[in-house]
Length: 270
Image 1 (cartoon, rainbow, N blue to C red):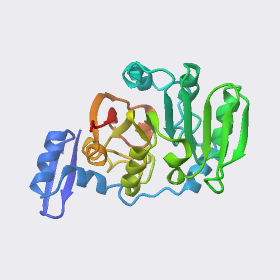
Image 2: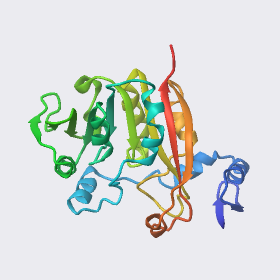
Image 3: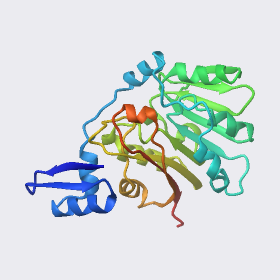
């Protein structure tokens, strides 16, 4: 499909196919990086925490998957790297079924989620009993702990969480978190994630590529170059897989393509 993109800085109008090579060439002719052009479309988009809570209250949670994410299943051996009893961290965990799947395998899970309803639904949907208690180090926050499995879910603003609460983690599974936070907060988010990584941590990150002129998010576009910019100084970044994940739901947003990309991010050896 052809579409027109205007570069005001150079006064040119470019007509090109939606592939990376031509996109980069057009951006270069304008004196801009292709990443800058892409990100500019969503730079000012902001979702308040209350809006996410409202989505949960109204059951507008099309982002929730009722099954274990296929990319986690496909790459679990590489993520575990022969380790057992690994501590997993789920940022913006929602009620992801992946958490119970991993706990059933003998791993421990810590998640952070703003919606109390989402956390309670996770335990209820999985027929698990739980305890609820305040968190002294996080004023206003609560932690919900599973009785049958080693799962602790914190109802809190993610940016208030830190390694002083639960230490560091051997794996971080980021499906729907980096792509959900406000684009202007990505550097702050990356700093938090890096601070939570143990020396042998393996951070599995799921991102999306699409035409941001057609949809403003969330989920937001996160180009590979930005992943490298956010994490590349202190971590090695490996693209594990890229695949077409366009469904009727995304077509309803106006998109004509959606590539899902899975990255493995590990701390650099000192």
